[in-house]
Every structure is written in structure tokens, then in C-alpha cells.
Amino acid sequence: MKTITNFEDVAAREGEFQLATYKKMPLAAVRGRGAWVETSAGERYLDLYGGHAVAATGHCHPHVVEALRAQAGELLFYSNLVYSEVRARAAEKLVSCAPAPIAKAFFCNSGTEANENAMRMARIVTGRERVITFTGGFHGRTADSISATFLGKYRELGRPNVPGHLCAEFGSIASVAALADESVAAVMLEPIQSMAGVKQARPEFYRALRELCDERGMLLIYDEVQTGVGRTGEWFFAGSAAGAGVVPDVITLAKALGSGVPVGACLTTDAVAARIKENDLGTTFGGGMLAMAAVVATLEAIERDGMLENARASERHLRESLEGVPGVARVRGAGLLLGLEFVDEIAAKVHQALLGERIITGTSSDARVLRLLPPLCLRREEVDLFVAALVKVTVVGNARSSGSKA
Image (tube, rainbow, N blue to C red; front, side, top):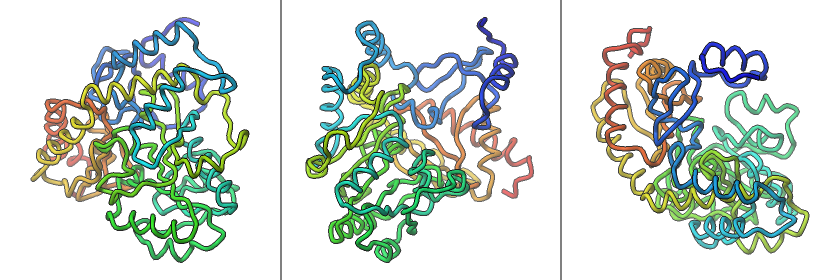
């Protein structure tokens, strides 16, 4: 097999040998640094999407790269059947970043696997079977997770669905209370619903959920696959002021946790962990040495480079810069999980027009909302570059001239 670099050849070979999944952007990424990726054609793109919120530390952060090189030269992998110093460090570091009473970590491979295991933990602990999730929530594509998803077409793709999943209205505690009987093991939610258009509830909703779960013997699970690991300007949404300081019983993570190396995790309390016995949970690749080295280095890079503070500062600068931009109704979200809500349904057209300006963004299930999930190292001048391009394509350029009513 020879190496190919021409974009048309790369696309043709993928089309011939790879099963179709996503509709792809017309570029082949070959390298990246910080918030930038370079294509096979030698073009540089400002990446404000981070490969589905994965590249939190930026592409090829030197500390992460060096940690992976060092670990790869020692031991790529061994399973959880042996102890591991790097796994111990990863668990300790991750738990130390989490709010009390979170005290234990279970490592797996992805966000959907983390969510599957979180629901299993709730069923084991409570002896119940049903799980309440929400309109607009997305929890993954494996059987239990996609059955817990009530967003657009996704749940239909998982048919036949796993039984025992109930749907409440996001932001409505009354709708949760109406479903929460003695058969319900857990309430699981994305505290900020990313794919639904970056939707967030009022702080009192999260507080009321915590109280209801405690009252009725249910576990509270936060799916922080996208909001976790510094994305909102805090290590987690759990324990933050935006969520009224509420800490759930289980937090699920993935995406940014390994800076691009596949890894997921469930974080939980000592009280929950005490009910989990050997062989209740398991995974072949979860907790592998290479992934654990990536976790440690990712958390260290975020900490050492002040990326939490930078995410908050970048959010403030972006919000200020977008004030008064025609067509932008408001900015949703927190930190660098942001949704730009337009007055009209032009998000897809803006996304395409920005690609023409060599800027990568994301869309959502809301046709008015453009999602931004950039690296947490995003610089002020990169925000300015994006805002200038956005004004160009929405006010005087492509998006408005392509049939939008805006």
C-alpha cells in the first residue's frame, strides 16, 4: 500500500474501502498544532470544532506528545489484570480534579461505553431497572446509550431499543417527578445539551434534580462527555455555580480526556463504589497504559498552561466581540462549549461559508445554532480572526446571498 497525499485520491480510497458514516468536510487533515490543522494540500484551517470536542489541549500539545512517546517506548498495553503505576497516577489525578464526594474512577474506551457502565452501576446499586433521560439529550450509539437518547433520528437508528428508558422534558422538574417511581434507578442528563443546540437549564433545575433523586432513591448521572475536562472553563459542570453546586453520583467522561487517544471514564462516590463487586464491570482496553499516559499529560497540560482561565477569557472576548453583529441573536453555553444562535436557520450555510474561509465549526440539531468546541488554548487573535470571517460571510458574503431570509 503506497502513501497518498492528493486530496482526491485520499477521498477516493476512503470511499472505496471505508464504510460510510459521517458526511465529511472536503479536506484531508495531515498534521495539527494548537488550534490549527494542516491539510494534504498544505492549507491551514483554524479548528473551532476540535474533532467533536476532543482536542482540548490543542493538536499535538508537546507535553502530551512527549508523554505518549515515553510510554510507547516502555509498554503500550496490558489489561486490568495487572496493576499499573501510570493507571494509578491517572486515577489519582482525575479524581483530584473532581468535586467531592467523587472519589473513584473506572476507565473504559469511549463516551458511550462510559454511559452504558454508568447506567449499569445505577441498576446494580438500586436494584431497579428504568432510567430517565431527557428530550434533546444524546448519550452515544451503543444499544443502551442510544436507547437513552431522545434527540432527532438517533433513537430510531438504535431499534429495537433497550427497554426501560423514560423521557422527561429537559428543564422541567415536574416532568421528572411524574416519571420517578420505585422502578427508576437513575436520572441521566447532559448538563449542557451540546448536539441539541447547546441548551442549558436554570441552576435551580439541577438542584431540584439532586433533591428529587435523594428523596426517591435514584442515582443522578451527569453525562459530561462534552462538558467535562475543562470545556466549560471549570474542570466539570458538576459542582459549578452554573449547576447550583450540585454534584451527581456518577460523572461520565471521554472526548477531551486523552487529547485524541481514545479513553473514557466513570467517576463516582465511595458510597456507589462500595456496592460494585469484582466482575460487575469490565473492559479489555480500558485503563491501558498508553491511554493512561494521555490522561495524566492532558490534565497536567490544562493545569500548567492555565487553560481553564483561558477558556473563560476566550468566552468573554467572543461574547463581547459578537455584540451587535447582525444576524446573531445570542451566544449559548459556557467556556468553550458555545452555540451561536442566529436569527434565522442559516447555521449550515454559515458552516459551509466559513470552511471557504478555512475555519472549521460545527452544526447542531437546531438549524439556527452553530457550535464552537475549540481547543482550550484558543488565543485572542484567533477569536478575532473567527469573528471577522463570521461578519464577512453573514453580513456581506456567502451565507446571506445563498437564499437566507436573514
